Length: 296
Image (cartoon, rainbow, N blue to C red; front, side, top):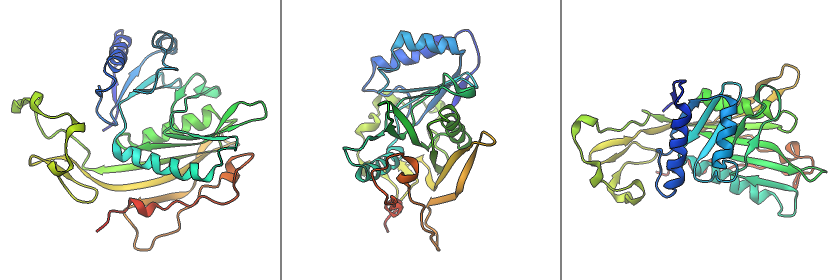
């Protein structure tokens, strides 16, 4: 579903504070649905005040906040879904296997990026995955990032890519995105008029696999109702900044991870030697995306 944008109002800050307090008070119980996003239009000075009041830089592991100064939009994200995390973990494991522990390179899934260039100066974003390299002054610099979109639409993913590439133009080399398309998009199959007492239902984490019915990539049914659509498409794109036009441009073409093609093409490797000044390897990192193909 697209992010819900709260209309500009004097109480937008109060709504944000209430949401953050709820997150902090209920760390083991999600306040937002998995992959759900809420957007609020607030001025930059209020974003700085929120930072100080709630110590967002240090206490950010139970929810995720990002801020886009070019649009004055604060985005608060709920916990990631399993399908979202499966892609992130797959990439993280492959990258970590390719990088020596002694190399001045780190792969991070919670690395906060503070933008300090151009129209995005003051923006903050936590990519789903990022590669950082230590420079000669012992400072960590971001070189590559990945953002995975499940509930986010494609345009929102591209805007996040632009924020990272332009906001860290002197550091970033490339940014990749993975879009997971669900058909139809999720919506609750129970209407408010049905009078079902949801207090009697289990929490999502308590459901057993045998209670749900479905095959492959969906759809999934529970108690005779469709709760999850079918994952109909997963694709990968790589983007970088054109230094002459200062606009982001796609590198190569879109590569489809799912569904499998009748005539599959080789998937482009990740070239660490082209991303890092002191690459720990000259071997291209080949990714076996067939792991994401449902078995018969």
